[in-house]
Length: 66
Image (tube, rainbow, N blue to C red):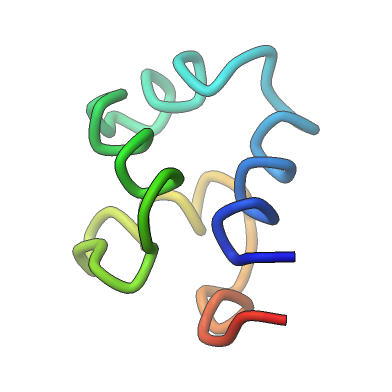
């Protein structure tokens, strides 16, 4: 499973929608969708940290794909 798919599943396990998560983390919805549709490797450090803090996870979990 790709990093992006794992992240999408983690978000949807805790939130009703991706849009709600984006609003709660103060990340533009379009940024979140681009990150999930393409490659997390191109995401800014700040965005990754916002996501990880909100999901209470270690950013290193996404350092490699399965």
